[in-house]
Image (cartoon, rainbow, N blue to C red; front, side, top):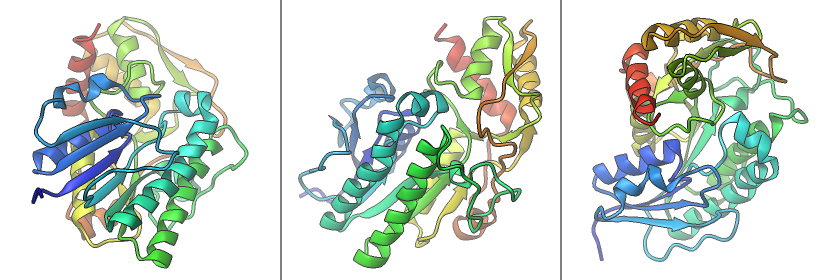
Length: 313
């Protein structure tokens, strides 16, 4: 039997999942990538086909999951993750956060595998505490349109901790803040690909509300480094991974126009329901427990993503 450690990545053909598969392969692991492709894409992982130890399985993890052979790690990243996706796929989003997490945890229990849940800053909702530390319980509207994602992830965290406490499953929880990088979908509705593609086409940049809401943006390589460190750590409670450099959405739009050299104007549209007014991670725990903090500056990261989208126009 192979001496290599073996990992299952659910949602492995998605934006983050594909980068994670790549990193795990690079660290010498065998990787089973599982995705039903409702928001993921084969093109995100096709460069990994033929790599020693990489297997892709098209499958919906809300059903019973069977992976023959040993598994050392299960990283549960399956879920629609952008508002345009989870508002279009509300039932699927709730099912993968609840049933999918349950099935993946059951597999971790059966295999004796370490389980890492991809949670989100959206567990904090529209926060009343700023920046957001892990011990803040959040301000979520369970019956609003965004509740399908927020509550799915909150349930996923709860069942993960229940499996840890009741069944002794070795678990980790990462709360992921806004992340950007190559392989984001151009039309996924998130602010980075939307603004960049509008700017590259000299179209008006559509800024929700008056643009005063804040966000912080973490480059994907930094995020994956934090997740990998968390996977290998002994820390069971949630850990925020994100970039604490905060800016308004209007400032971000102006930066995109500057970096692309675009002639685009900035226009303002109606603010979505329950859109968070502020979003900034407190990464004190990540620094202390993982020795992690972001390394890639916003300008460095954005230039890479602008090049990525420019090459695909």
